[in-house]
Image (cartoon, rainbow, N blue to C red; front, side, top):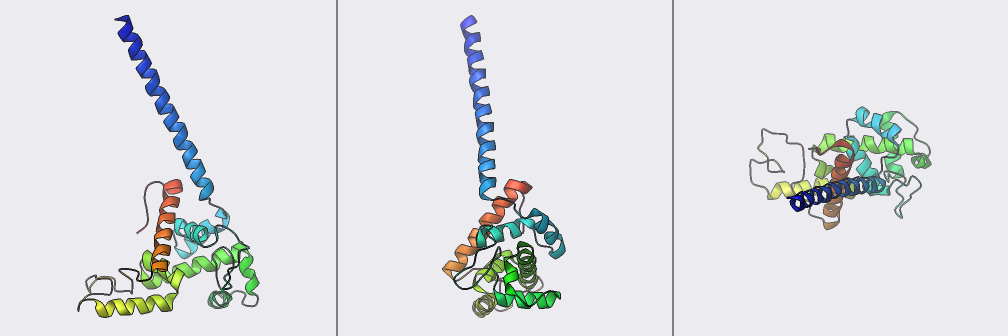
Length: 208
């Protein structure tokens, strides 16, 4: 009887230690992932999310994927800053928003880059109403994505929208699949990164 009691106590202690170790490892793993997927520039991103109706997880994911939070980054093709915007985008978006249009070097300012980048994402979602299509357009450009949609539409059956939905539903142009390997990989990376931000900071939910 005494031996059985000792064995029971040992089992309980082992179980408690296992639970404690699991909890500590889980906490460490979450903190490690948060260092990889940080939420820098919260003071700018949170109000921009509300102003332009873009989920914060999408904004953070765009910054993570496009520049890894490096405001000084300039690509070989001239894209600048956190959201990797072009001087042409700077002039176009600032003109639409009634802002400064002179010096694209302002894109190195995190506040300017994040504001125009979030505005850009909001325009893309208003046009396509599909995050996969938005991400594809961020990678390949609207003109290219519009051509893919047109080609996809010609191949689809009569009476269906380009994405295969019934004609009475939202018929804004969107892709049902991404035909370019690079763009498809970018879309998947954005989706994975958005999910990571949601799971780390917002719970287990997601965006549609």
